Length: 130
Image 1 (cartoon, rainbow, N blue to C red):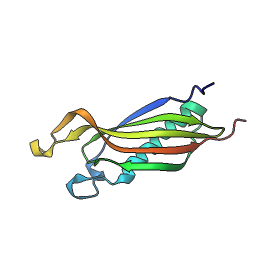
Image 2 (cartoon, helix red, strand yellow; image 1 turned 45 degrees about the vertical axis):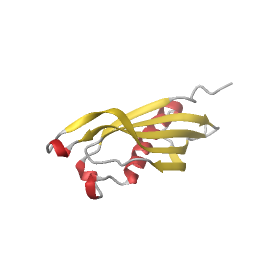
Image 3 (cartoon, rainbow, N blue to C red; image 1 turned 180 degrees about the vertical axis):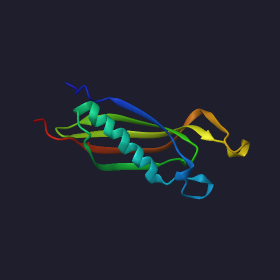
């Protein structure tokens, strides 16, 4: 019998402010996406176990496309395994809107297809059931 928490999906969206640009071309460092994964994992733990939980590890992280200041990023977390105290979660950060400074200082657009920027698999732990 499958655990009903497997398959739970939580989605966050976040605008990437220009203050987070770290490299030329308004690129944002990879740690920014990992921070977003931590935020969405916290909500997953609250929904599955009534506790914020703790991030234990990543078993895989892939940086597939750049994140830039001015992007709107959609972060998706899906529970793929439930252990006694651990939860395995697949993460994906997708760019759904992108700044277009070539069209004007504050120009931006909604992308026809999201760009998958970062994927990861991580493990969180929650307290034992009392």
